[in-house]
Length: 212
Image (cartoon, rainbow, N blue to C red; front, side):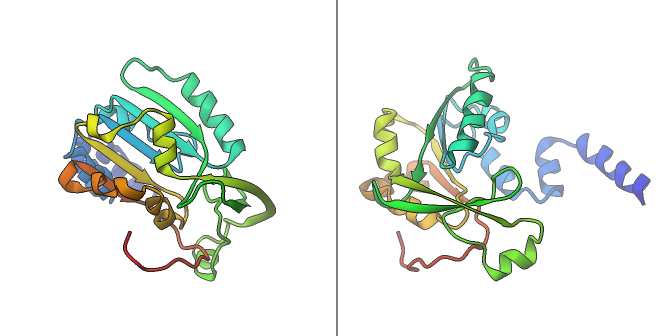
């Protein structure tokens, strides 16, 4: 079985990238590749900027990475400082993105590399599905910022951008992030060439099911 699995991996790695993504069930990457080249990517919930090479493959001229956890952000900042800026300009911001500015949140820290930390505690479903991922019991208080205010700080005006993408991976807080876009939400539409991608895990949270 181990030999068969190794052979399968060897074959997949030699397939053209679109086919490889399909085999790996990475529909997100498969779909987004059809949209390249992209001028701007804003990634909320950046972690360690693991997707930086993929974004450069998409032809992104600029990527803004936003990470809430201060400890994770320090690693992110170092990672980007040591990464080439020749193909793409990589900028970063340490902020908990939400629907309002200056609202205090209790940020729950999880074990591992911090990728599961969230403003919400893990739900029963989350605990059953990811048994090794647990809250450490440590909580830090963070002030929120809206995505609109962060974009303004980094002089990002979507009217001057041909094609852009917003990636939101904030462990259940996606709706609040999108609400913080305020009047710019109409610019974050497929018609205006901006794709919105969310990748959330189930956490304990109470959010209205109303549309953004």
